[in-house]
Length: 317
Image (cartoon, rainbow, N blue to C red; front, side):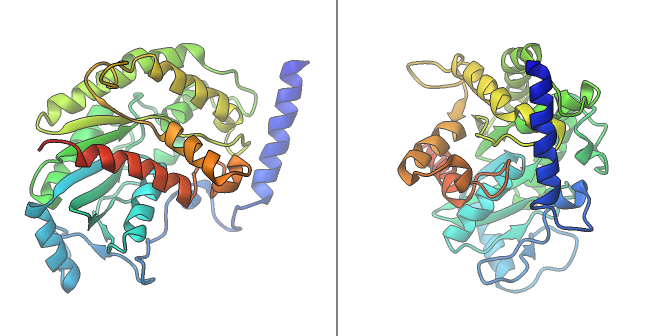
């Protein structure tokens, strides 16, 4: 009876999601892919220096300066990180440029407060097949390590150096991956305890070690899962809050109590704590501070970026 009630609850949520906040005429892939982002003046952001297309105007002069004079912080994650970087750039009044990559969530970067802040997308550290939104990507069958090498090469090509700091996320897309590889079992899906345990104790530390070995001059941090809202949009989100909570709790057990490093060697950028602490100040329902079921809104995203950039600024480069 308990499972049956859960099924009906998630089914009702699915219907609600289909009716609310889904523009007509767009499929799931089109909804996930951001339209061309706008800068704070409402203009489409420019291509990055290093793109094959011609570059002209003040944006190129700015980007040329960024290559050699600032600390480069690379957010390597998902749309939550894209949102946070974009919001932080806009909040600082910093012009945003595209990285000219071809991921489903195109990379962006900007410069403010002595930092070049860049974002690029990857579909999680769990091996393929990935969640189906990644299917159109040319690297849809590639291993996570190959996708990272590709991204790192693009960053180095764009900025003329490797990142001084890399903040890695691998959580929401891993959850979607597990759901996909379980046969996309609709809305009725049990919390995958074994997969969470493997992700926490093998997938994440092994991937972070690979990132460190591939870019040894970079400081590495891992971004914790962020809170999500219960939703019937795609089956894996029916148990989203429970799964994210268990993933987060497992990670915390691997954070050193003295130096606060994850697995004793990596920074831990705690999006969950930053968002929940900010919510205590803001008040109201947590969902009121989200822009949809998955993505924290401006205030929560800025709280996360405050923690992340404070970590990056404190690094000795």
